Length: 234
Image 1 (spheres, rainbow, N blue to C red):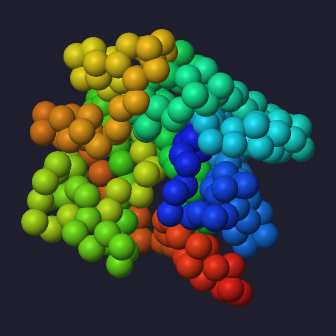
Image 2 (image 1 turned 90 degrees about the vertical axis):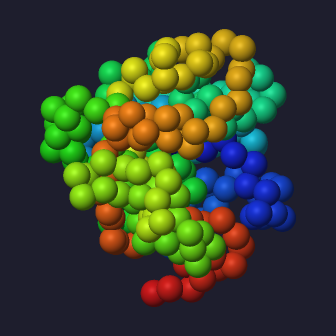
Image 3 (image 1 turned 180 degrees about the vertical axis):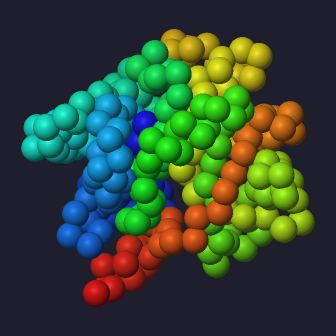
């Protein structure tokens, strides 16, 4: 699942007319980088959620999937269905009927050009029996305190003195988005907007989330300045 429903307020005025996942980075729309990486890893069935200026993302995904045989993109249109974005956990719960028992999730506004989505990662996660596996990155200047810790046993820690930043990339088991872990009904028919971090913290406290560090290029393209800096690189 590629998350692409956010408003991108910090990117205004650019996002007043273009949804953030479609802003060009190094010659192509930002969300196309992870979509191409997923496809390269053999993960051709994708779900993309939309809200703000969602029709533009719809058009892009339809055109992109036509150009890439073996790729099947399904849209979860939160804006059309409810008039607003459902946040991360709410959006995943909304799309749950479209997702497999184990699935990737990542944000469509993260630039991580060298990350490899592999079947081996999926198989290791499936064998672990855990509810989630997430990738952490070194803390960028705009998030110096980080989000989650990492124990010597490979399990994520909900609160730690030494914390890393959540990359937004993760593998999940659908049970995490069902009772008793998640109170939002599968399919989210009521349109509940729910963040992901509290859900992840509950699962971490129960020892149900593993993690690893990713040290490759990773940029949260959250401001016009960061976007310009990326596009100035050779």
